[in-house]
Every structure is written in C-alpha cells, then in structure tokens.
Length: 163
Image (cartoon, rainbow, N blue to C red; front, top):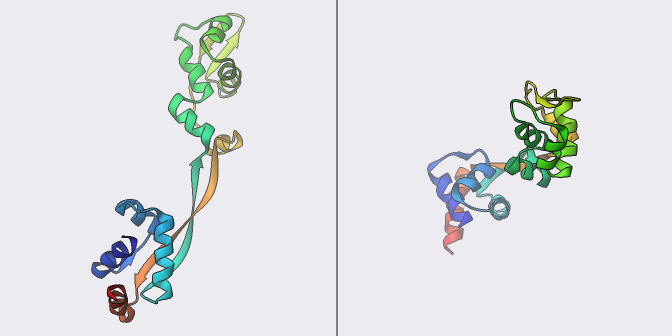
C-alpha cells in the first residue's frame, strides 16, 4: 500500500516535499513509508533527500495539562472574582495542584496571596522557555524525506512492481 501510494502520487506529480505530511494524508505509518522509500531509492526509482525538522512535542505531564489545565490555570480558575481565603482554596484543589499552581500563579502575577486571602490579577501569555524549564515540553528532531522521481528509472520501477 505504501509503495502504491508513493508511485501513484509521483506518477501524476513531480515531488512529495514532506514524507511525514504525505504519510499523515494517506493514513500510513511513517516508519512503514520510510522503509518503502529506502527500497525505492535503492532501486533508483525515486530520489530521496533526507531532511530534519525540529519540532516541540508535549511530554506526558504536558498532555495531562492540556486536558486539565496547568496547575496555575487550575488555581486561577478556582479563585472567584471576589477572592477566596487561602484555606478554602486549598480545600478546592488537589494538594499538588495547589502547591505548584500557587507558586507559578504568584510568580506570573496572576494572583496575589495575602492576609486577606487569594485574589486574581492580570494574566500574561506563556513562554516556550518556561514550559521547557518545567519539563512540560521537549524539543525533538522530526526526520522526513523529500522525494522526486527519477524519470528514466520510474517506468522500470513499475515493471519491477508487476513482476
């Protein structure tokens, strides 16, 4: 299926500029596609240039925060507009969420914790450096291929496939 997808696409198009995107569009696992690419390149049916893109990926804790919100967001949302006592806020939240959330929310100046209780302040935008330092995201290279048919060999490849 992967070979048919590649050869069929290249029969009508000059190039597949990104094998990762191509795999996603046709519903094929990129590892499977990569093996076919290497085989077709070995038979000189296609020319494949490897490239690497760097992308950010959420780690498990980061994925959890996407679903539930970061501790500081959970804490901020638990503080009503009129404020709340520290004790009542602690009762509303998981102890870990309260500990981490209060630290980050105060640091970001989202909330103020004082004798009168906890009150909301203005919210600032998050930063990739901060998320990385908190080990919520990680930077990984993403390998892919740019494919181009070799005109003189493409027809031979179709014949090889039929044999």
